[in-house]
Image (cartoon, rainbow, N blue to C red; front, side):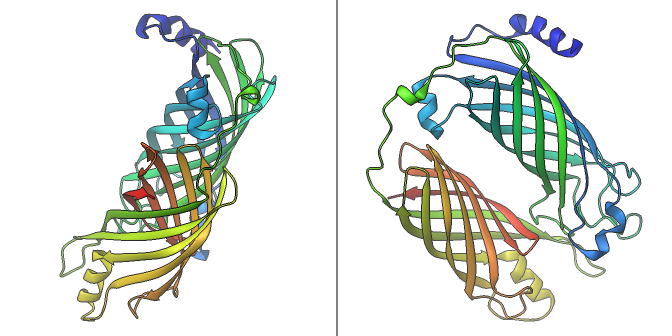
Length: 360
């Protein structure tokens, strides 16, 4: 509490005045959880409980233009955090920073809720080493990505101070850039306080006209790219393989928020090409797959989850032809799209990518 009061006293000095419709929040949170051992050989190293702390800063704009970006009022902010896995020899600790997007639910009530999507970077102090740390196949590189989905309950203690209870599902992975990269999944439960520097009037969007869906048929073309790194061997150096591809999807919006889509995805993966070359298998390394699934549309934001089936793939590719494709996209000027994607097979993430495209 003293930290919140100190920060609130300093804030007017370091922050210029802002409009009445913009609310600023400073938050602190402590949390603990457990590690999910998603393979039998990870059970022994997954017995400890992570503990962590987080400091956040966010802004919420309460006007109609902000509401129409996601059909909600949302906090957008940044965080810094610290997590200790209580296994310093093998798992170490992480220090992270990044951003988040947090739509509010029942924002005018004393007890209200929110959903938070978090993305950032995590620096990990202990990673895999064949000689000194062979059991830690969670992390292959000190710098990794951090993703989290959270459900939050908030209670207004005063006009300025709100208490929060947060359940999060956290994932740390380098996206397949360096192996091994099995990634760590660890749910957490946290308690926190939020200090609102300038409580703003809370409008009721129920009185605003609802936007309509002008075109229920949607079509989209995306291009994407990433890198993946093959580890060094006794005779071969570490090698970077470039990944690129494109996808074309079409579908139908059953409402402002929900759509079903399907299409094709082509992937040229330099990691697989180099892997086959090392094994003296001069065969096709490209993939062509069918996609089908669900999309959640929140104003300018679109979250897609597709199930994929490879029509064409290298014969040596493990785990069959089935895969999952996830995307988080943002619409720019109504037609252009930017975002990130994740491709996974069963419980193993193949890698993240950056993507851009156009919607027709």
